[in-house]
Figure 1 (tube, rainbow, N blue to C red):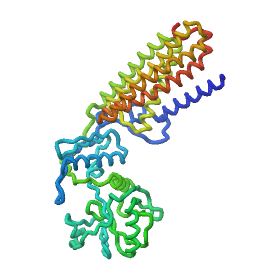
Figure 2: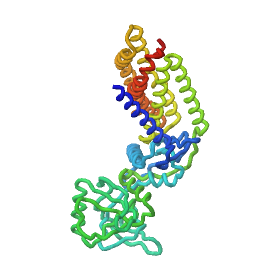
Figure 3: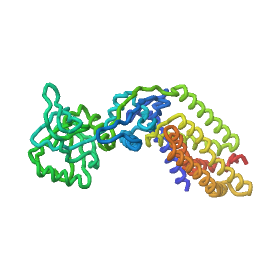
Figure 4: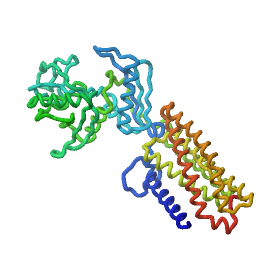
Length: 443
């Protein structure tokens, strides 16, 4: 029995050390940013604490359709999908009037790259150009009847015969060509698109299938053979793998339903900055210290054990934020500080139950078992109600509100683990000292 207790204690200690490695990386197994003070703090910082890019996009009319508010809403969904594909966190997207979209991207200090990633229409077209090979950079005119070639070549008349579009794609991933080592984008068509692609390549061996993005030619390969399964690749012209990845992101995110024009672009510094971060962290440290002192004064040695469990809780929460790629905003820091007080609440409920059992004359071992069992239902009810509130905030909120909700919800889940499991492991491993020294639970 005793060996099982020590085994659990070892697991908890290893878990704490692993959380330290993930959250702060004192052993540089991998390279992360940003750094904070003497620690390599791995958590992403939001726009209010780190800065980023600020863009204002405006939907544009085309000869075929007029940009409606519904089109702008659809464009917002595509842009949000592209941002998700990039792994960017805590972006802020909002409508301004009937045609404008405001996009704030934390961590991206180069507005031009932000525009390249989210502002392109990204209409991918597979065009039958027959015996004509078009150079990279050639562009079809808006009416699709003429191709403008790079200077000094003169424009040529060539109707655009679209076979498939990006809407027919199932997936697109960047990789390296195994033979040449150059970056490429592998794509896969879905459903009927795969069959259309296979039939077209079978019927047009020796002819050109030109790939164009937003009317600009990416490549114009020769069809060497029938291509089964709807699989193909885009190659040639990528400077590096990151450029191929950006194209894959655009293709996976889908094309914008209407073209958008960037009417404002700028880099923004942190709206709150380092001073706010330092003050918030200082407030969290003071709050945690007060909780530590309170628990020791009220419950003596068990209170100290609960404080150790609270340290494990804080480490696990920071590690979870890193693993999930969450972004820490100032409201998120507030949620973290709030969750520290909530995390200790479960231990207080358990310890009060144990005190009742001890006053009733039970032994320390029996009182601990009964106290944990009796407090469980109250802990579960209180945490579930808080978790529901956090999920509603996440579902309905935007930007920093989501950051607060994520921190709060993770805090609730992890606090239940540390209160029920970690604190119990610490108390069980110290039962002998509690029994011999009579230093238990303030009774």
